[in-house]
Image 1 (cartoon, rainbow, N blue to C red):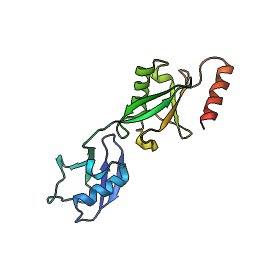
Image 2: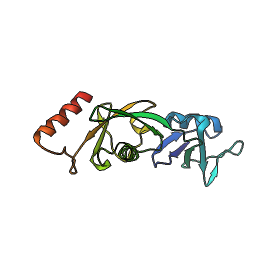
Image 3: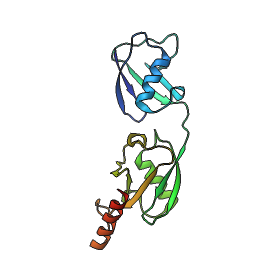
Image 4: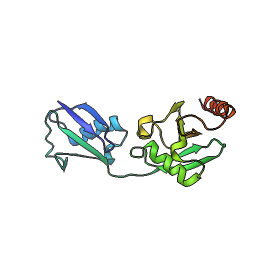
Length: 170
């Protein structure tokens, strides 16, 4: 039967499960979708946590997921000045916007709305989580400045320097 898994961040995943599925097998399947280990998953539906032996699911049920532990991990931010700083983040719950705010608080270089973060050659979107991009413990994100209108600030020379920085990162 088909159920929907919904994360705390609002992402939803369709999942096919057996009618007689155990809680362990359901957590294992959800873990494959979310990268949260089965022992850290809590599942609930119809306003109550799912437990054995009363695990009763119907086609179309929505299962909410949350993590028992919100342990932080370290990632690194390499600034456009060449410095590298460590930040503690939650890969599943922190969005790129949250990371930008942490950078603004810790480094004081530029406002978060003037930051662009790049990972694996891709510009990261503010509303997505770190896990969405496959970012893992101790990965490095690159911080690139941008102007208020989405372009770099300053002269054409600054634009060329920014483009060179992005090309170097890629």
